[in-house]
Length: 346
Ligand code: IPM
Ligand code: MN
Image (cartoon, rainbow, N blue to C red):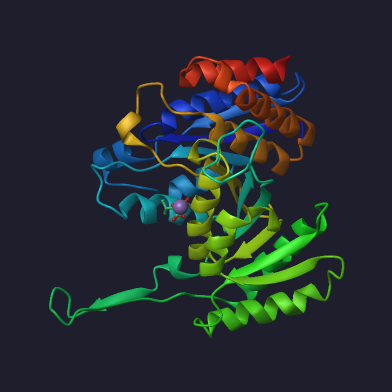
């Protein structure tokens, strides 16, 4: 469409700094006739301390009116663990039915990896985003006693598994290698694991061109380090996806370049794009954060909204910038943003 109505949530810590650069690059890449309208929202630790609120129904109704959401990072040591995670981030992902959590990993030329010999890494993880152990379905009894029992039940529905598996097959079909790997733990999680495996096998019949593979999640962590080139598209549950995408980021350039999209494919709700990294309070306000992950998340946002050419320009700019980084003195967050904005505009 010829206009983008964007909700912007800078959040906490370095979120503020990296989002500013993401918006700088977004403004620079858009053609004159695409009108960008942004509205800032102050969710995060400050608002929580001031009002006790994390995300209200009124907030959700307001956010819903936008085409997409750009998020920096939410989280601060002054807020107890879990309050903003559950009360803001997961609440938003669940309320807006962001069931496809898309996390690409691509090792770009000249980017350092801890792996031996610069393997070709170019895969995308389709992490389920609304089910699994993240649903908050659990409880504690005999709390504080030596006999305390805590449960955290993983919820997997045929509907939820099938829609994310279908999305992953469609993405695999659209890529040159056409390969899809299911990552789970069906040798132990014989209820959820069998549901995933059965759905995967059934949907595979509709995609005869897609090569399929199954790997247990523990073995997948080995292959992500010893043979990451074997992966093209991975589909997995919410918690396994959380863990393997941090590992994937670590081997393909680090958390400074890992982008993600929380996608509602039907478009009923706005999708949300965010760097995989957190608010990094230890380096906040110092201009030290790498805005590349946010800028690459902006590229995912543009592709989601159908601005493919602009998305590709951003990805090329980040790739070119990273390729010559070793030859340059260290730059600040805004200097990197300026360089990327100049590249996409030129
Ligand atoms: C992520 C984060 C979140 C998650 C936390 C902050 C709730 O680790 O986006 O990967 O576990 O999904
Ligand atoms: Mn995570």
